[in-house]
Amino acid sequence: MVFEKTFTLLSGRSVKVIATAKSLIDKVKPEIEVLIKDPKEEDVHSAIGLSHPKYWKLRKLDSQQIKSLQIQYSGICDKQLKKAITEFERLQLLPESN
Image (cartoon, rainbow, N blue to C red; front, side):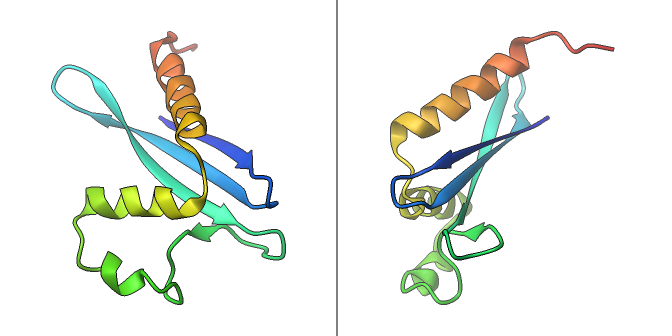
């Protein structure tokens, strides 16, 4: 299951939070990806791209640290991220309709 939620920050930047179900042994844990789109851009992209000063630092990190840094540089606050995760988990608990 994939869940997407878009937040618009005060700066006009749109931040898209994408949660994908990652199945563990006894429960489902969301895997989070964050993409951004600034007001003058047409496409969404990672917060830290090739032209970002932290890009080369990013290449040396493991996948969990990379996601954490991407979230940090997207501009989204913890409250908004937790809201998206809570909504994703609530949808996981709903029975699937046929």
